[in-house]
Image 1 (cartoon, rainbow, N blue to C red):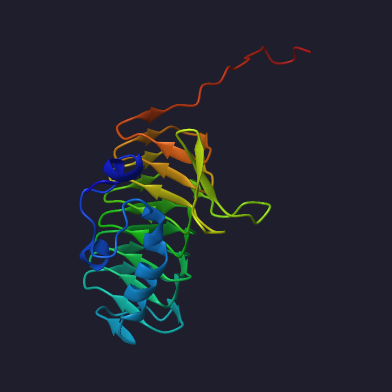
Image 2 (cartoon, rainbow, N blue to C red):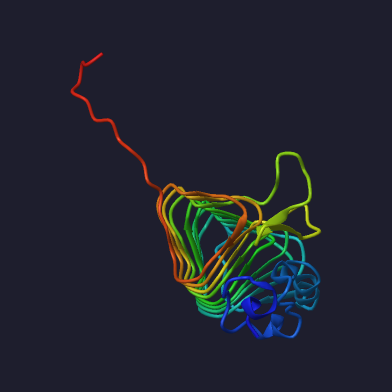
Length: 233
């Protein structure tokens, strides 16, 4: 059952990873980042690394699982508990911390930081991204410099505007929930408590306020440019 049929949330994920499917609460999709993620990470073996690691990859903590075919570049910092699926690519300077779960075929790029994040198969945060307390659906692609902000300046509970109400999440840290196939443009910023429906495109430079955005949409930033000859006062 999709979230939209339960509580007005936009269409998000057609199929959840098996590890999370049984614990999914469609009315509160952000709860995947709470007890379900804790349970999945707690069940990881102490160490299940199926590839040879370059000695310049830095491992910390316990319960780190890395699937076959994954490539991890020198300089990456991986803190357990952490699960990285098969055929992923972790590029130089990537930092994964706080309890992360990555499906198969994911990409985490140079100097990207993931903190308590879930990435479904094929999700990509490939260039200078911050992904905090967020869920990326299948084949999501974050443009260079996209930030998924997860904390209010006042430290208050994150609520999500929907249909004239503000839905409480019970969380002080919550980034974005991105449906399957969402794409963000370079240097876009999604404020804490942003839910974006499947296949929606967010253009370059957009600063998206908290809320629920429909599937199959385009979110554009319109700006007016003043182009003047050089030397004009």
